[in-house]
Length: 171
Image 1 (cartoon, rainbow, N blue to C red):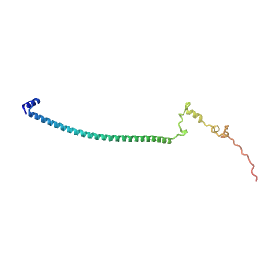
Image 2 (image 1 turned 120 degrees about the horizontal axis):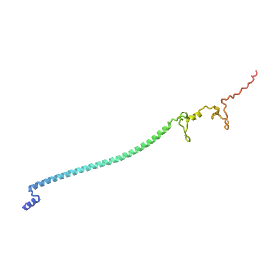
Image 3 (image 1 turned 120 degrees about the vertical axis):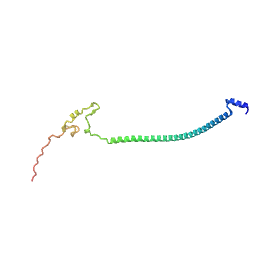
Image 4 (image 1 turned 90 degrees about the vertical axis):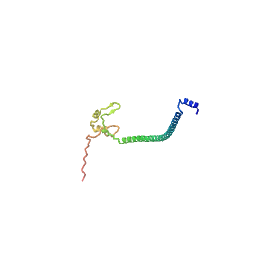
């Protein structure tokens, strides 16, 4: 090495000696090796994370397909359940109608009869008017022999005739 090169090197490297330059170069090589190792480690980790991401994406796709199939099954089950519920409601209504107990006319509560034309009817007046005993011959249900003319019935009237006497038989 010439003196001019040595002077240029010192001026370029701020007055460091060759030994200091060798140490500086060694330190920089070690840092470069360390950075290269970190780069390889990070590259390896990135590749592993890509593989894991691809695996998760595949798992997600399979889960999405299974989920859509389950949703379709759930829609079918709900449709069947709704149809069954409608059929069950129809059967319950039919059963309730079939098992309905009707109260005979005489046992009905007639205190609140309402006529559509005139409004509420007082049942006590109706009872006073229609519950009085009616003689049979005046009854509207009395037997009529001539449909054109209503005749008084003979019930309760003494209309007996005497039986004629006959002569005893000759001996």
